Amino acid sequence: MKQTQTAELTTGLTILMAIATGLVVASNYYAQPLLDTIAGQFNLTTNMAGFIVTAAQLGYAAGLLFLVPLGDLFERKRLILTMTFLSALGLLITALSNNIWQILLGTALTGLFSVVAQVLIPLAASIAKPHKRGKAVGMIMSGLLLGILLARTVSGAVAMVGGWRAIYWVAFALLMLLMIVLAIKLPRYHQKTNLNYFQLIGSIGRLFFGTPVLAVRASLGALSFANFGLLWTAMAFLLASPPFNYSEGTIGLFGLVGAAGAIMASQAGHLVDKGKGKLITTIGLVLLLLSWIPIGLAKYSLVAFIIGILVLDLAVQAVHVTSQSTLYRILPEARNRLTAGYMTSYFIGGALGSLLSGYAYEHAGWEGVAIAGAILTTLSLIIWAIGIRYDPIITTTDD
Image (tube, rainbow, N blue to C red; front, side, top):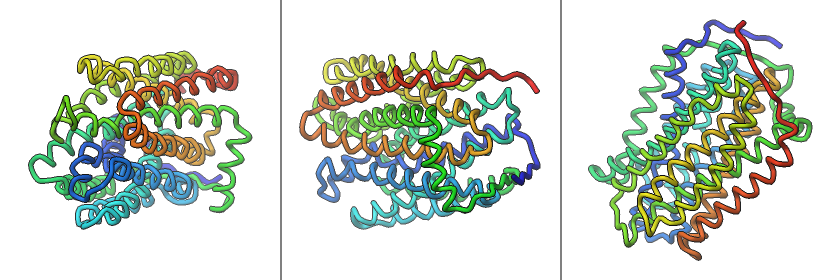
């Protein structure tokens, strides 16, 4: 295996990667607080409007499966810059769209190439010192989740000033600026495998069947992010209707609550470094199940709802960071493929959660959404109870 490396992971570079990851992934979530507004403009049903979020996540899942493995074939800096540009192009299409199909096209294109975030994360893991790897991954994953959550807040605020299209123009400009900064600051890194592209794609399936910890962690990731999609997709419709009747800007502010949960879970990767990955995963799944109790009471208590959002986002992030930090240690030579396998499952789960959210809300109201979340989390706990024995206990020390 040929490997070239010209820099190590500094704190400044880690922060830049976290910001870049957040900015790129945020592009897939600007629509969420705007769904009610977009549905009204284009005369869409709740279910059809929710498919805007689903299109982004399906595009992201496709990119994870078919594009992220390219990180094992090509020099990663050039790959990252190309993907950032193409993701920005999708935002431009959405900003110029005149119908729902153009929105879906731009959204899917943005989602497809915003997997640049999942090339940045294994790059950071590759150039970080072993005893700092979990902490670095945790920081960058916090950037990713903060991007997802704060996207709602920023999107709602910008929409109140300039309409729903304005956020896509702003995001397009930000990604173009980001591309310039990354071109200057990112180190070159190439870790070439002896496999060709099609062998790489096929090897992802073999990794699933031959690596039980990947299958278990991918299942947990998919189900936890399905919970995330359930909550945040239906939330826009709940908060835009009685008794709340909130504007896009106010709905977007709820992203700040989720952001607080993400920050609280940022040390999960560091705890994996200390051999506590199993404990953090178990606690995270239990908290995820419990979070649906106050979330289900949203119509009766706004305080309970906010607490539920905080706990759910903390739990999802804790399980996610723990899973990725664990996977990055088992097969260092296949980090991009492990990322592709895990994150494809993760975002397919999110896409299905968004679809289920729109359906559940349309047919069973907010209570139906909460029940669906509790069922999914119970399934996660069953999978973890069966699969915990495959999970390694890993500790790292200074080199």
